[in-house]
Image (cartoon, rainbow, N blue to C red; front, side, top):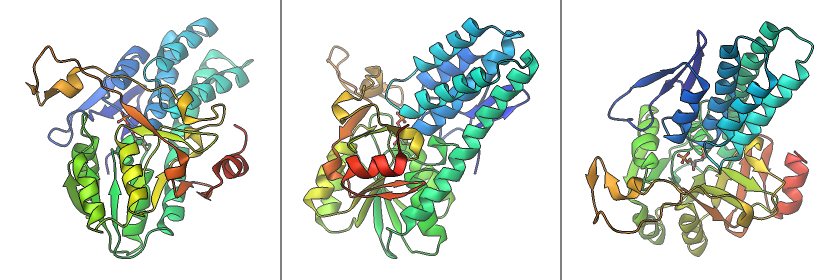
Length: 342
Ligand code: MRU
């Protein structure tokens, strides 16, 4: 499995996720500004992955300063925090880099720079470990013979490796369970069609691509036994933001009595927000909806809305799979107990 992002010789290498699976193009980024733009343009995407990219971008930006300058360091952090608003993991990773900077006071510039690089790599390593633990906990919810629906891409490409929702699916598959996956194509950016199917097929998992409007049809026919998705931000009452379209899938799942699980590490939780209504939702460029593969599909002058995420109320969630265990309702209380005050 190719790494989503890699620190190599004071450069950041990342695969261009806009081009997969047709082309495998790698970018070598030399400045924090290039990293910020890569996050904005979704060369790299997925909540944990953009957190790791931001942490590496900060380490790279500080290294390029050539000397200690706290204001410049904070400006780099500020720039990266302006890239995408919804995923908590981005802000969590930036805060962790700030804490590392503060705790390195009294060290030489070279030592501080090394500590920041090491912290970014540690964030990446921890993420993969958490995904594997989530996989184990999540696997206990999957039965042999299940067909699982997933939305967007919550796989290796969206994380440091292995994946959150796809980590659960991988764990079930590699534990010997015979499972099938239905991947929603995930308009408008097509993460499900382009990235999820590509990842799962590489692991030899039986995968069906469906367009987003087909989920209800297959649920009604009784073909889908579980839904597992990732998350960009989970708040204190268990409401969560994930890729646009997740809410519709959750409502459909409840209507058909299908268990609906969310898989996410503690870096996705934002206990400072009490309900999902408070989560900032990113609005992206109109061309993502208007243009497919370079071809316009509607009149140029049509008005367009393009929210990148939606919020699913926790009453639709059967369980939240974390690296610390599966959190069940009542969420307010159990999230506090398992994730703690962050
Ligand atoms: O806009 P994206 O592609 O960054 O959105 C990604 C998602 O919504 C994922 O489902 C989420 O980040 C969980 S990834 C482990």
